[in-house]
Amino acid sequence: MSEHTTLRMEGILKEFPGVVANDHVNLSVERGEIHGLLGENGAGKSTLMKILYGLYSQDAGDIYLDGERLDLGSPQDAIDAGIGMVHQHFMLIPRLTVAENVVLGEREPATAFRGDAEDSWLPAAVRNNSLVQSLAGQFSLGLDVPEQRIQDLADQYGFDIDVSAKIWELDVGQQQRVEILKALYRDVDLLILDEPTAVLTPTEAERLFDSLERLTDEGLSIIFITHKLTEVDAIVDRVTVLREGENVGTAELSSVSRADLAEMMVGREVLFEIDREAIDLGDPVLRARGVEATDNRDIEALSGIDLTVRQGEIVGIAGVSGNGQKELAEVMAGIRDVTAGELVVNGEDITGAKPKTFVDSGVSFVPEDRLQYGCAEDLSVMHNATMKDFRDSRFGDRPFLDYGELRDYAETLVDEFDVRGVSDVTETQAGDLSGGNLQKLILAREIYRDPDLLIANQPTRGVDVGAIEFIRETLLEQRKAGTGIILLSEDLDEIFDLSDRILVVYEGEFVYETTPAEADRERIGLEMTGGGGDDGKTVAPPQHGATQESES
Figure 1 (tube, rainbow, N blue to C red):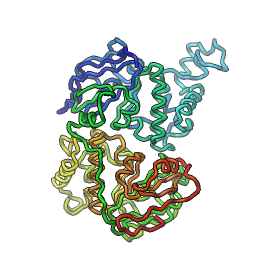
Figure 2: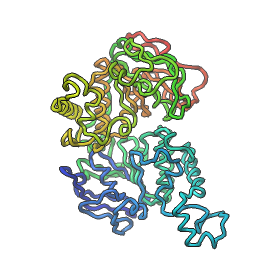
Figure 3: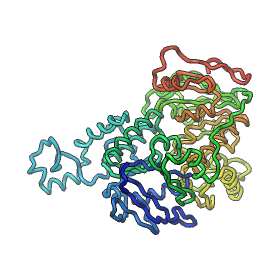
C-alpha cells in the first residue's frame, strides 16, 4: 500500500433539521488501499459519502484529492475529479438495456462519428467536423463502440450478464453487478462501494475481492462501506468507524479484532453466538405440493416444489441469486400466481387466492427489495406501519378511521423494534429511514400481526451488525412463539445459525435437504451451483420428536 494520501476529508459537518449527520468528521484514504467504512445504519456513512460524491454539500469542512481542494456541487463534478460511487439502492432505468444504463450520463457519444473512434467507417475529416459532432451528440446514445467494452468488462469480472438485456429482465444480483459495471466503465481513481456484496454469493464476493485487489495494485483507491466484519477481515487494509455522526477511530486491521470493531460500531459488546434452543414442532402451517410458477418474462422459474413448514420451524432456503428464490417467496406470500400445484395454509386451500386472502390467513412477508416492494417510501412511517391492518375494528369503522389509534400503533412498533430516525410517525417518510431502520419497520409491521407463517427474503441484507443481531433474535423469538418461518438468504452463516432444516434451490427446484447439525458446507456449495451429483435429495431425519413428511 502506498504511503501517499490521495483523499483527505477534514472537519466535515452536515446538519439536517434536528439531526447532526456528520459531526466534524475526518477521513483519509491512501493511494492503492481498500479503506473500510463501518458504522450502524444512521451513523453517517452514507451522508459522508454522498458529500464526497457531490450529492450533498457540507456545511463546513474541506475535501482534498491528491492535494487539490475540491468544490463538489454535483456527481458530475465528482466524476470529473475521478470519483465514482456504487450505491446500495440501485439507480437503474428498468426499460433500458444494461449497456444503455452504463453509458447513460456520458457527455460525448462513443460512436463512429467521434474523432477518436477506432475502426470507424467514416473518414477522419468527417468525424472531426464540428457539425457532425454536434448532431451525433444530439441524436445518438452511441452504443456501437462501448457495448463490446462493457460486455468485456462483465465477462472479465464474471458478472454473467448480457449487456443487451433489459434491466427489468435481470434479478437483483445481476442488477447490483450492473451498478458496479457503471463505475468500472468510467475508469475512476477513487471508487466508493456502498455494500457492494449485499446480493453476491460467497464465491461471487471472492471474485469481486480479487478484482478489487487487482485494481488497487494499479493505484486505484477504494472506500468499502460494509456491515460484514468478515469482509473487513478479507479485503480491507485500514478501517474507519463512525458512530452517531462522529469518527470514533481509524485502525490497521492487524491491530483490532472483530469484537473490537463491533463494539466501536454500536458502543456495547455484540453477541456473535446465537442460541437457537430446541423446541417441539407443531402442526403444518403450510403445505405446498407440485408448485410451478413463471418469472416476469413468462419463463419457468419454479418446478415441482414440495414444501411443508410447521409451527415453530425455520426452513432455510439456500441458493445462488436468480435460481427461483424471488418467485418462491412471492408465490408463498400470494403475490405471484402459480401455474400448477396447490398451496394450503392452516388446512385451507388458498391456491390462486388474492393477496388479501393470504394476509387474512395469517401470512406475513418481508420482501428482498424493501424499497420497491416492502414500503411506500413517500408515505409516512404511520401509513407504512398500519397499511396491512388499518381495516381492523380497533382503528375505527370504515370509512372513518381513528387517527389517534393509528398513530399510537405506529409509535408502539417504532419503540418496540427500536426503529431510529423517526421524529414523528406522521411526518417522517419511510424513504427517509436508513436501510437497517426501514428493515426493522417492515419486520415490525409483519411480525406484530402475530402471523402463522412468515416469509423472510434476505431479511438482513445490507444492514449493520447491530440490526442483524436484532433481526435474527426477533426471528428466533417468533419461532419460539410458534410461527412457521421460511428464511431465504444468500448468507450461509445465517442459514446455518437460524434454520431447523436447510433446502438448496437450484434452477427452480429443491435439489438437496439437510439439517445444520448434519450439513456439509462443501456439498451445499456444490448443490447451489448444480454440481452436487446425481444421488438425489438427502432428506434429514425429524428433529425434536416432530413428525416430518418425506416429501417436504
